[in-house]
Length: 196
Image (tube, rainbow, N blue to C red; front, side, top):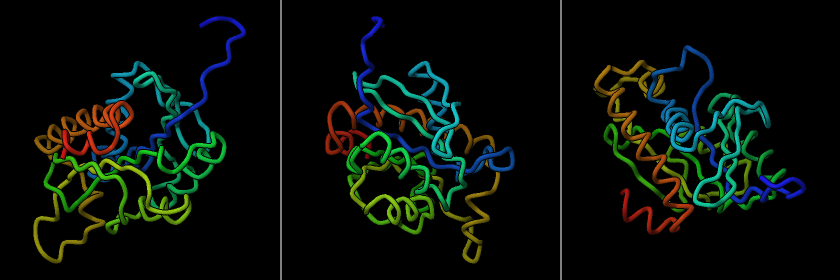
């Protein structure tokens, strides 16, 4: 980097949804955090600087300065963290990509969407409520539904993964990391065609 040259401004924000702390590691609800680990590996960065109630980093993805964030607010208050980053970097909602788990998709399946409702996901619900609407791209990672009727969904997404499911989720997180690059490089429609 040349001395005196100002870094390019952040043009995208990536919000990886999950819950902080050892209790929530290796659970379905932390598919977003698992994707952050895949991006760390591919981009050669560490998402570990505390800012905007999140662990953060800045990375160069597809020649764009991208702000990576893992909110530490717990899932239900993710919008607080995302809103602060958007306001600071002046990034429009259309350039905020959110990565979350989705219990309505089979384990390991990806779904890229341009916009949409929360689908009952509390992290997405809070971002929609606090960041100005539903018009943001998101990558949903399938974690499968509860094994039987009457099984509490919250208990299911917060339960520990079996080794085989953990492997499937890690593979999906790696694909989701590639899908982030595809959205930035080619746009949401192209990424939807490739990954859905």
